Every structure is written in structure tokens, then in C-alpha cells.
Image (tube, rainbow over all chains, first blue to last red; front, top):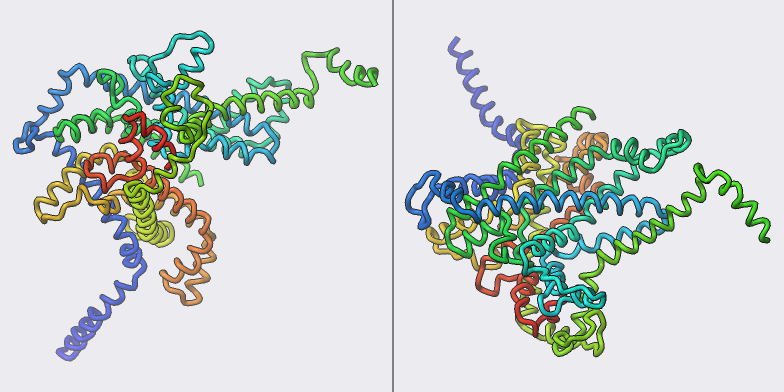
Length: 309
Length: 271
């Protein structure tokens, strides 16, 4: 009896000694250590700051007193805030729609030409996407420059009055959207081109035999076949455009009279330049709802596709 | 000759509603080229204008002449730029930061992607989805709390982070790692399971399987991820922005700070 107990304790001790080694060699442990840097990085530099900004947004300017939702109420009372909400939505939605349209049209044209020339055209059309946005924005800024605008010079040749590209609220908003479309459209083009290539040619041939015109072919074949990729790219682009910073910051810096600020630039203006970090954090938090909605849609799509496979 | 042309076109003209598919295609092709050229002009306009302007003298930029043509081409701007200490330092900053960030990104995301795609463990699918979701959190949401975090860190430890260039090495991976991990998971998932099973049967450890089997096979994907990480950190504008001291700035930042003075217009033209 005692001997048996002794032997069991001895064996359990030896088990314990080897068990640590065995745990270390187990697949899940190794996997855990392989993902540990990733988990740490996300936890410390993404998740923590995200929740920290929630906390920040409830402090007063000197960050010593808890003011609850005071910052938010303060924002609601400011006219500029509602202007920024409106401008962000106009900016993101218009830009994404235009990008998607141009991307779709250009992808069709590239798809139409013989395969041999497609590489070259793809390369040429991808240029705006490859240049760092901050750099190409400068190029645009010079094209828009109030006194030396190269566009206005061309317009003057046709007898059109100079346009205040970044000086007038309407034109400034338009310019910001134009530059955003210029930078983003090639991405749509490349995604749609890939999707177009995966549509079976037989469907078009069948439609042609049935006497479908080009519009019917697009509406009944191309669009349904590309639905998934269109949804995903649009949602992605909506997120990126909504959180855009460089273009507005460089082109107009929010002006004239704060008319072109979007959430990110206004948060920067208030938080870093103006020194009121809590208020800036509060502004940037307003990006969260629309991002969450987009993320839910994207996730749903991914899980659905995952279950299909 | 003329008669043969006529007979060739006549049937098509006789029933114009249907046309011939071949002729329709030829027209579609012509229109495609026409519009492609239009779009190419639209897409290439700013870069070309930057190139043109970078070849001009300051006097020519402010003169009221055709801005689309260079009357006195000069390379002085490039000469000045490349002999300037400060520009070379910015350039070195950009290059150094980008290269190190790429290395860090790969060291973190490749093992993680391997573990998430091949070694199923508790919570691995949730983690994979979580990685993807963090990619959706924009940097513009994070820069204020990060700014404050680093300020607090300085108060605690006395280590100044905000105006040092190497703080970028800590921040940029947050922008690159989630996406790179995500696409690497995709690439690794497309590798046939028989490959790593064979490696394990032959007695390879997990690490050997990753380094000797997966990395070589998924090399195209790895290169794509590398390029992505490099461009993200190379083109970054927001994160170096808050720092007032110049040594942190990268090329993009420098160019933008120069935008106000017309005289240096052309200097920022290329980087």
C-alpha cells in the first residue's frame, strides 16, 4: 500500500519534471511563442492606445480632471464639428463612388485591349498609386497654386477665368476629392481588372448569341460576377478614405476657414497643433462608428466565404 | 479593288442593327485606346509636371510663361539637393527606417502567419480575425493616444521618444505587421499540406519546416509583403509630422515643409 503510494508519487514527480519539457515541445506552445511578438505588438501599440483614447477623451484639457462626456457635449455645440461631420461624409462617399466608377471603366478598357499591351498600360495607370501620397499631393498643390497655377494657365488659353482651386470652399472641397480620386482609382482598377479576368468568356459569348447589348452584358454578367470584389474594395476604400489625413493636410490644411477639415485633420489640428489632446481624441473617436459598420460587413463577407470553401 | 471593299462592307451596312462582331470589336478597341490615353494623361499629369518643374530655374517658375514647358533646362536643383547635408540626412533617415521596419515586420509576421495558418491552437482563428481587424483601425485614430503614451513614458523613464527617429521603428510595424501577417496567412494556406507533412515525417522541427519549406515556397508572397511594408514606411507622412525637430523628418515631410517658399519649389520636386 505504502509502497504503491510511494511509487505513484515518484512517478508523478518524474511526470512533472518531464511535463514542462513536453509542454514546451507541444505544438500549441511553439505556436504560441511564434505568435507572441504579434500579440504583444497588437496589444501594446494598437489595442491599448485605442482604449486609451477612450479614456483620454473624458479628461479636461490639462488632463488632470475627469470631465465625463464634457468634451463630446462641447463638440456638439460647435458649428465646426457638424461641418467636419458633413465634410467627412461628403468627402468619403463622393471620392469612393468616383474611384469605383473610374476604376471600373478603366479596368474595362484595359481588359479590352490585346493581352500583350496590358502590362504596359497597367504599369502606366498604376503610377499615382505608387508615388507616396505626400509627394504627389505636393505636385497637385503646385498645379493648384493660386498665383502660378498651371491649370489656370491652360484655362486662360481658352478664355476661362482663373479658378481659386484651394481658396474657395467649394473648389477646395472639389480639389481634395479630385486628388483623392486620382490617388485611389488605380487601386480599384487593378482589383477590378483581376476580377474581370476571372469572369468566364463563355458567358459573354452566350449573351452575344442571345443578342444582348453591351449594357445588358455589363448589368447581367459582369456586375453580378464581380459583386464580391466590388463590395470588399469599396468597404476597404471607404475606411481608408474616411480616415484620410495626408491629402487634406497638405493641400488645404483644413482651410479655407476650416471648410475642408475631415475627422483626422481636425483631430490633428486640435490635439497636436492646438495642444488639447483630449478634444483631439474625442474627435478621432467619431471615426469609430462608421469603421465598425464597415468592419462588420467585411467580416461577414469573410466568414461567409470561409464557410463556402 | 474598290469592288472588293464594297462587297466586304455591304452586308454589314445592309443590316446595321446586328453588325458584325468582328467590326464591333475593332471599334471597341479603338475607343479603348482613345480613353486609355485620356486616363493615362490624367494619371500622369502631376508626376510629369513635377519632373518638368524640377528642371526649371527659380526665375522661370515665377515668370508668366507657359508652365508646361522648360525653356532653360537646368540640373542645378538636383545638384543643390544632393550636396545638401540636411537632404542627405533625410534621405538616409527614410531609407534606414524603411529597411529596418521591413526586417522587423518580417521577423514578426512570418512566424506568426505560419503558426496561425498551420499550427491550430486554442484561439488561433479568433487571433487571425483579430489581426485582420487591427488592420482596419486607421493610424489617424491612434496617433493621439500614442503621442500621449510616449510623453508619459518619457516622464517615467526619462527616455525621450517623441523626437527620435528610432521611435518610428516602434510605430511603423503597427501599420505593416497586421496586413503582412494577413496576406502571409493567405499564402501559407495555399501551400499543399503534404509538403509540411512530409517535412515533419522526415524529422524536421516546426522551425525547420518554416524556414526550409515554407519560406522558399511562399517567396513571391514574401516579396509582395516586403514591398508593401517598405512602401508604407517610405511614404509615411502623419507619424513623423508632430515632431518639430528636423532630424526625425523623412523625405516626404521635408518636401512638405518646403512647400511655402516658391524659391525652393523645384527643390522638393523629386525625392
